[in-house]
Length: 264
Image (tube, rainbow, N blue to C red):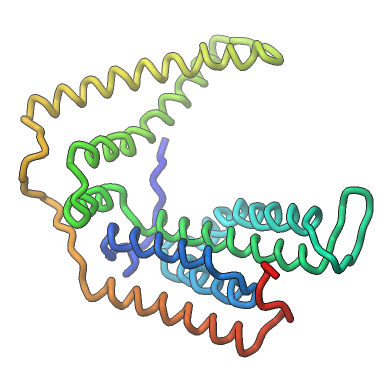
């Protein structure tokens, strides 16, 4: 079974992964301190443009990937809108109490969650795991012992998924009947979790023996893949920073909503 996504390489794929990860974490922190719904709505456009036009993936695939994000947006926003607190009541029925304050807070939380999701998707679609771990070792000085362990774990995931498919097909051929209720959970653990876990332990042991045999250690080493920070990373920062500044200016100059701070 093929688990690799087909895409065209863009300039985002050539950014330094560790630098991109650090920059995205800073944006996450920045979003936590933005309480103006006009600004957060405009800021959503910035990662959305990059995901749609600069990831190199097919538009149909991107639409499918965004479905869970839309569900996340509506679920996080509706829970606050329907059950939030506020003094200006718009509509009340039973436990549902929609107020002006809860509406704007829900909208704000929904767009903040959507921003987190889009930035995470942007990073995942434009970053190769191998390049990320090499960059973490070379730029952020992560010990190779941990980086290579995570890299091996990530590379094993598709193998585990393929083994799961083979195991499920084998059980279907053997005609194993599924139980009901709690017994079904215990049956699934016995039929799937135990064989997959035992296979993973054997595979991890073989990898550890191979690394020991090749004298693997945390000492200074050379790398086949060299990662570095370039002007392209600077252009990326300027693009994001300019987009955020423009979104902030439009949000404060031409506000969509009268409220400017959802905490009030």
